[in-house]
Image 1 (tube, helix red, strand yellow):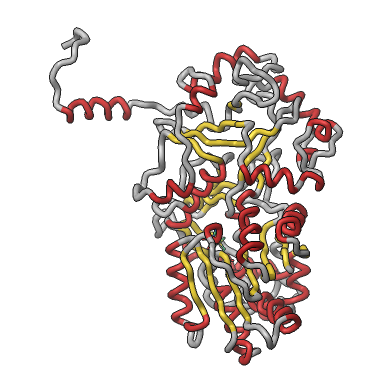
Image 2: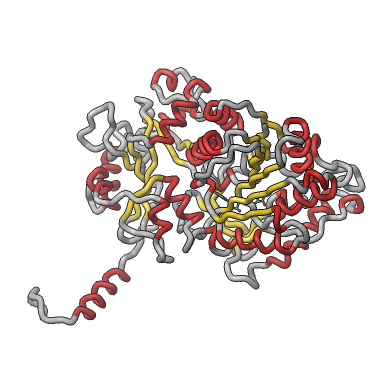
Length: 509
Ligand SMILES: C[S@@+](CC[C@H](N)C(=O)[O-])C[C@H]1O[C@@H](n2cnc3c(N)ncnc32)[C@H](O)[C@@H]1O
């Protein structure tokens, strides 16, 4: 009608108009979710500008103008407060396969949702762990180059050209099977015989069993070498991913004699609530790297810590917010690691006693801050293993008599974000190549998000939470001590089981 008056329209034509309007929305790709450091008001300094921009930058007014543009011109506080808080648990109850909009959540809930949402999470879609099939004939392979050549031919069956968006990863349990699993079996048996046999049964819990290969290799080794102990062995896998738990079930049904030794529970270990009073071994290979983390930044001048939150707006765009209100696990982390050097207090910060932020060059950051309107007086990011803290608490409360054996990457090949502490690698396997994203704020379910583990810190965390001592060994040392080194030796004396994975470590008690 053109006169601004509402005429009679059917509901469907209104919704058509609405959807046309929505379709016309154009995402601003010049702004990434981490371009702006949106801060909520500090708890220790009064800030009438809601800390929306960097007061110490010479581009102060530019930031003042630009930053609220992607917040519908609202202040960070008003924008942030207009979204309800949700979490991974709530999101996993939904039957929708479309990721949420109009919500905010902790960084770790966003990562959990991206990786483990039952509908669209990465581990519930096309994720597949490389499976070797037959073990390598190590002794008849000339050298490492030939080993890698043979290994890469085994990848051919996984070509993504033939499979829709297949996500493939490989783990040492698979690559070096059965030798890797057998090394763990030896460690477990020696410790069992030393401390528990013949009074207790051998009880093994595996967190995150992948294809079930480790279970198979460990149990077959025990059955072959210690049949009496095998008869007293129970093996339980706790697996968060439904497709992988089904794969594990299938695998153990295919192996003679294993049926009544194995139980597979499709559940997150973080939700484990049964108490296991018996002595047991808890093992987990390459599980820590996919455990969600929280993220912190510090005020460059006051040392006040800020916790990362993610806002997903009505268009599905992500915004990273920094809130001085810390959540319980983050407080626990800071408290427990205080005297190992991690400290959010200003005085330590300035005297460089802050670990690990003292690895970053504070002066350089302050200098950059002057020229970067978007840094907003905040340091580089520090990703902290808050879900691991929950796991250690579960181990203390529900598995009081456990021995722990876990392994993971102590560092990862340099990711794009080299300046952050524990920054994850965020990658997707596309057309037979890995493509990486500079931020974990990428489309949920499409990317693997892999964190390195600071073994020095988690060793201390474990002891402080559980009251038990634990050791750290490099992958090479652990395998040297417990594996069949001759069995994996190449013709020229090189040993890929020892030399590959030089960036992995074991935590073992
Ligand atoms: C990288 S895969 C490693 C699989 C296997 N351990 C191996 O070494 O081949 C990580 C495994 O941990 C599982 N996982 C991750 N978080 C978990 C959790 N909170 N509880 C139980 N399983 C989990 C994944 O679904 C997957 O099976």
